[in-house]
Image (cartoon, rainbow, N blue to C red):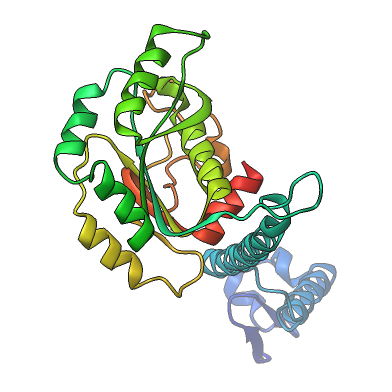
Length: 295
């Protein structure tokens, strides 16, 4: 007479007695008591492990979310630090830019905006075009400065050699028009960034203006529109106005405009932060002061 068989699906069976042996022939290996005991222990172990709480591995989405949060926190801290640095620079400017060796203050001339027109030794025709169009001349230029606080100057450095014919040519032109701002800078196409920083530093030292503008000599400016636009932002801190853009950071050394310090902007394929094109842009007093002190 057979004895009922008790099975656990997909794990194995345990049979008592020999009632089924006549149907399947000789007693198979799984009927061996030792084997049955081992199978039972393995089954119990597997079941117990299933009920043990296991830490779930974070999904890729969770990891990216945490990375994004960390990145945003770092950006916030960077902006906070930059803001504090610029505010500190504005405070320091009172002493570092106005003070002299005797501790007496040298008063800078108050202005609304200082416009520096970037020019080169070979750009005489461009300068003449500017003078004939949007840049006043003679007494009109002086009146614009005295009554409106609008300072306009061609900014240029000097040649690599002293008493060069190029420098003398600029001196002669300035004697006629009185519209140059000479910079302590050696002229060169690959030194334009340094020249711009020196312009801001020099302008801040000479004029206490609300805004400082850099413009190329092949750009014709609507002066009234420029002044009106700046006036709308006069009470705002850290103003940066221009034709904003953003482009890829070129990590390839063979690229024409390869970025030597591309790694500062993240992984390959990242973009620069938004910035103004170089033809014309304006910055407020606090930003110009920061550049002046930290160039």
